[in-house]
Image (cartoon, rainbow, N blue to C red; front, side):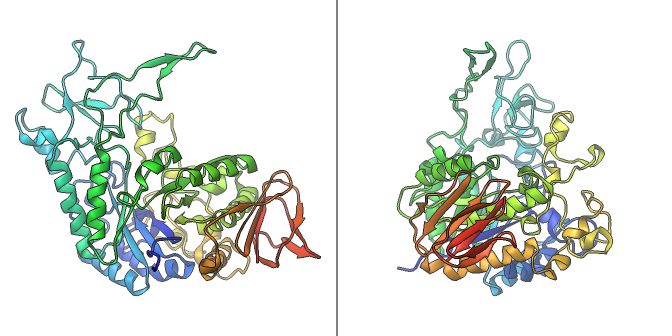
Length: 517
């Protein structure tokens, strides 16, 4: 029986606002993406994930949706989406749409109707509650962006729930109208040809109905009070029925469409990555550069998925986390480690997600406070820097204004010297990070049918991880100094030009990795 297309696939996340600007207004758009699809195809990926491109006030850059059936005019039109999809399919690239079912924008017609009067039927689509007798929020739940998870409705007596920004009111999935509406939304995009969805905050749709306060516990050592982490606000059992229905919808298309949940905790993966619910969830590696910690993380993700056809979906980055090069040490050290990490993860059984700019070795940008736009920064009063630093536009051409992204000033500032990472510059350099990604993904695709699903960890020196998958051996040196170990095959790929195999011995410089065949 042939494997589904997504099995072992490589996905490329496109942050629409920062990828490519076609009309020189400083903002990326759908025609810009279409013009660069050949670049994505040549990278060696199988599919792209588009971040939200719907009409939106942009309080959280598209994750505050005001219309699920359209395209933000800054990004183009529905016809532009259709052209992007058609061209991607010509290039044999699949396209995932980002669906945001936990909350809408406060400017969505549903919410505007809900707050228009106390008896409007749309109120049941959201969570409204009376304040406490002292006028404070209904309970002590907190927002992921800082502060209470409740705000008073405008011109009303009740408060509404928002686990994120106040401009993102949470939907009430216990109201039958909400799942019915989202089935209609899914079918709209699938009927246009979308190949599946990445589901935003996929475990959070249903909240506990009693709205109970989150209890505090006292640390036995320090005496400090903190919230009880075992108290469950989200992840209610009714969610499984929603995803079973979504899977039925996805399976009704030929070929079947794919559902990817934004769920990062391995302990949750086994609940949702099952034959009748979601296909994938993210195994995000964020540990410090330490062999034992990385192996523990890899093993935890693999143990969580023991069911038929379930494999981890490996990733190092997305639009919400600090860029890997910076996270792993910054500069040449961080870049060497990120190159090594690609070989380590790309050799594992499962799928891989890349975030735009990883292939260029981009670092986190220290965006000036006055230019920051992330609600995490704004709602924390600047205490949290937020996520703007990993969202700075891509550099396309060295030596051009704004590194070829746009002739207009980009929506986030591009730092001085950003052009040294530009696509055109790296494409001409054989040892560039871009060349390394292209070679790695090409070999991964070439070897796909020869590699065993089973992974076997191998004996290796301290601070080195090594494993085999059939004929392929992967080794990664987490030390800052060289490591040597037996070489069961010839050198296929090295993350560093000084990786070598001589007389049956593999030499790995510090912070490097290799594939042997």
